[in-house]
Image 1 (spheres, rainbow, N blue to C red):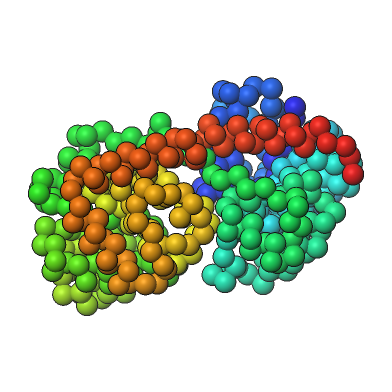
Image 2: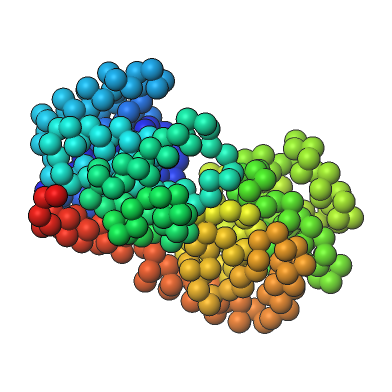
Length: 380
C-alpha cells in the first residue's frame, strides 16, 4: 500500500518528528506500507534524516502563499504520477493544499491531520482563514480527520469540522529511547551540588507564557520554606540566567538560590532522570509530549488539567486546574511528603501506562488499522 504524506515543512518540530517516527516504525513492523513524503517548502533536518533511511522525500520550495497556484499544480502532477492509495496530510496548510490537490488528482482516500488544541494562543490571520476553509471543506475532501488529542477533536467539532470523520490517534513515544546512563545523571547532579538528600522538582519547556513557568515558580515559592531540601530545576530554551523576566520572578520568591536554570539541553532524558518529581504547569496543551516522556522515564508527575494531560497521566500522579497556583503548590507538597517508595511506584506505573497506551508501537498499529479500514471503504 502506497502512502504519500504531505506536510508544510520538515524542520525539527512535533508533527515532523512524529511523521518520521511513524514511517521508521512501519518500516520495521509493517513493510507492506510504502511511505514517501512531500514537503511544501524545504527538506529540513527531518527530511534529510528520512532520506538517509531510504525514504523518498521531495521538497517543492514554496516560500509564500503567492506560490500557492504553482504548488497546487505541482502537487497534482506528482500525485497523478505516483497514484498513491492514501494521501495523508499534516496540519492546516497541508490539509488544505494537499487535500485539494489529491481530490483534483482523483484520489479519494485523503486523511487530514489536526494537532492544535487551543486556537486562542497565537496563530496568524492567514492560519485562521485556512482553518475556516478547512472546516467547510471537511465535509467534502477528507475520508478521515486524525486528531492528536481528544481536546483537539472537541475544539474542531465546535469550529464546524465534520465530527463523524474524526478519529483520535495520540502521539507515540519511542519508550526504548527514553534512557539515561546513571553516570550522566550522577554527573549532572554533582555539577549542580545536588546531594543524595536533595529532592529535585523540575519542569521542561521553552520559555513561553503558555508553558506556565511563572506559575511553577510561584508554586515553588509557596512550598520552599516547607521543604528546605528541595531544589527547583528548569530546563528549556530561554530558561536561563540571561532571561531577566524569569530571573525577576524567581527573585520574588525570596528563594533564588533554590532554583537551577539549565536552559536548552540536548540530554532531556538525563535532565528528567535527575528529577524526583516532574511538573507540567502548562496553561494549554494538545497531546503533552514532555509529560509522556517524563512518565516513560519513571518520574512521578504533577500536571495541570489542559488538553489531554489528565487522559495521559491517568491515576499515576496529581492533576490540578490550570492557573491555580495554590492547588499546584498543594499537589507538590503532597508529592514531596509521601515516601520515596510511593513516589517510585507512581513513576513505574506511569512508565507502564506509556508502554501500554502511548508507545510508538501502539501508535503505528492504530495508523496501520486506519489505513486498512479506509482503503476497504467504498468510494464516495
